[in-house]
Image (cartoon, rainbow, N blue to C red; front, side, top):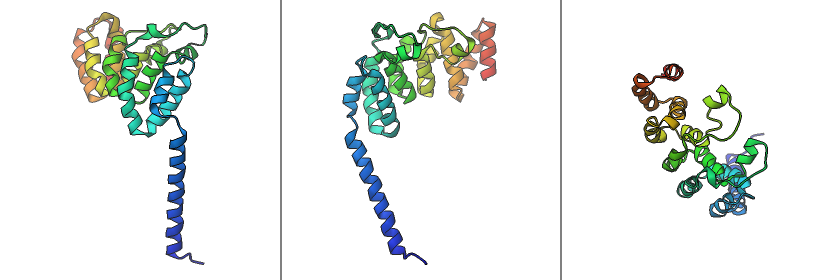
Amino acid sequence: MRIPSKIIASMAALACWNCLFVHLIMAQSRPAPSELVQKLQSEKTTDEARKQLLQVGNSDPEVRRYLAAQLPPLIQRGPKSCPPSDIQDVFKRWHACPWYNAVELSGKLRIAEAVTALAPWIGWRADGPFSPTLEARLVLHPAAKALAEIGDPAIPVVQQALSNPKDHYPAVRILCIIHTAKAKAVLQEDLPHETNSAVQTMIKNSL
């Protein structure tokens, strides 16, 4: 039995209205971005706020724009603003720190406006085990990792960091991870000046 086209159209319209209704209910039930940013700044609520902001930031451009203005001042506080903690697990300890969560959000959501605030911390490394894999992925360099996730908009500040011995290695790693034409051009320009054979090999493998 064929269903009349008018009935099909009505059913489709009803389904759309139901979806819109559910979306409106969810939007009304979730906390406002300003409330979540406030919670992000408290060590007791920062991790849950990070999770919620990451979720809504990925789906709502307005939230991303709001965070573009709010995250840089939090990042400028630096890692010394992290509260003392007895948590042994390094990742749980980081997620109890508002600064780290602001840095992570800037990277995961690719907040280009946070680039300047992240730049001073390119060479900062958190306490943790050393391994070539961890270093290559910048796992213990949160600001550098965030800049690598942001991508091309981060390249100008990363290029400047190449001249700083403390920041040089993570800056090269950032460019290798970004791996775009712009990043490769900076690596190509830097290669003749490299004196470390391991870094030279790393750059050549990325080009």
